[in-house]
Image 1 (cartoon, rainbow, N blue to C red):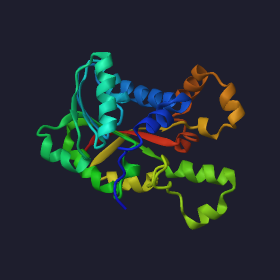
Image 2: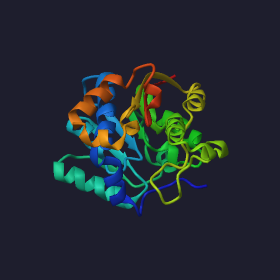
Image 3: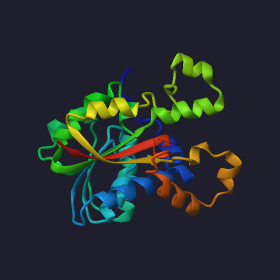
Length: 249
């Protein structure tokens, strides 16, 4: 299995990932965590697998110096257009993560790696590269598709045959990730390189709500409650994605 890029799915990606309440909740949780963790000064930031640049633009608007690395040209073009419309400068690199160490000479204060690991054939192999790209004393913002949440959702739907066969990966041409990550396995893989300082769940209840309740709920209420419960000890681990702020050891 190869790493998955999104050359042919940029517009569908924009609609499915960032359209509606799901995308708004995702951005709200990531941004709240970063505001809490980062110092109030300009930082050099690298966004690995930057996609359409939503998070990078938000950081640029807060005064940070941002570099976007994205292997899919249509995605990077979308990010360029987003930055141009906002009149914000940035550096754009079309490259997979495997090529970044050869192109980037200085480590960054903050490295973002959001919704990347679950599309990689061997997710653990990116971790040492992210460590080299992050300066000592810097931060890694790591968001990944949570296997526990996928198991729980399948339990709720009664998909027991699917669980017994352990076939939880998405179809090749779908936007369901091909490598959902077990958070305990990932934490063990991180341990020699990173200290996980904070953990949040992204969409800890929204995706489990009956659709009729989803459609009735006000977005501001959803955002307020997702932010309030994102670190609750009973609910954080149910997040469709998990967001970890890490410091290099």
